[in-house]
Amino acid sequence: DIQMTQSPSSLSASVGDRVTITCQASQDISIYINWYQQKPGKAPKLLIYDASNLEAGVPSRFSGGGSGTDFTFTISSLQPEDVARYFCQQSDNLPFTFGQGTKLEI
Amino acid sequence: EVQMLESGGDLVQPGGSLRLSCAASGFTFSNYAMSWVRQAPGKGLEWVSAIIGNGASTYYTDSVKGRFTISRDNSKNTLYLQMSNLRADDTAVYFCAKGKHFWGQGTLVTVSS
Image 1 (spheres, helix red, strand yellow):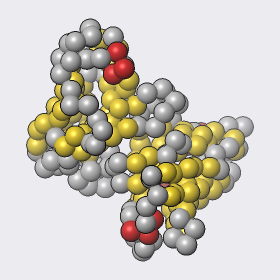
Image 2 (cartoon, rainbow over the protein chains, first blue to last red; image 1 turned 45 degrees about the vertical axis):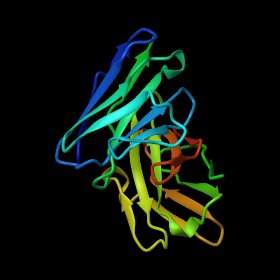
Image 3 (tube, rainbow over the protein chains, first blue to last red; image 1 turned 90 degrees about the horizontal axis):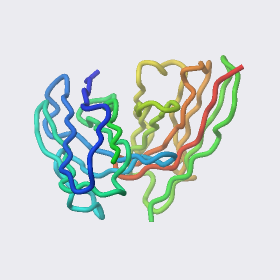
Image 4 (tube, helix red, strand yellow; image 1 turned 30 degrees about the vertical axis):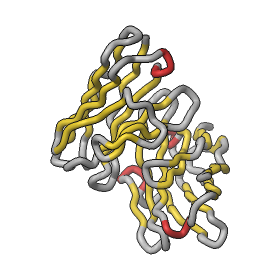
């Protein structure tokens, strides 16, 4: 199985800050990584798919990049409503494994 | 509008069985692979199983192989997860998902004596 190493596990930042989360895959997954936001008691919400594609309706302050094994997820200007847990997921090979998540606080 | 509604979650004893359902609407169900993903309380997400549109191929994570069976009834637009020989570490919220874009709200399975 492909291992996804996500860091940091938690992060505290201020409103307006630029925030970056990274995921490293244990093998080449090309661009097949997705980024989700999850708020307590809710289902995960897709923000970015295939490394850098913004899901419809998602604010443009969210972005993603990378290819191969190293990926980044960035919030350009942190907003109070962005408090959540964020997960990466590889969709290159089954099982579609997730990173362990990043808890983002303000 | 795409919607998925899971049901069937319950409290069950170790070694017991349970069947989860996911009723889908708003898209041509038979055209899409569907998945189950679970999340243990306070933990991360774990992909569990997937099935292609016509049901001919199924996939499982190692920890549930031989215990869980994914199936679908395209005439009823419904996805299923039959779970048997349940263990305490199967305790989780189970989400059904259409690809990566659409997820249900989840149903809670608790395995405890």
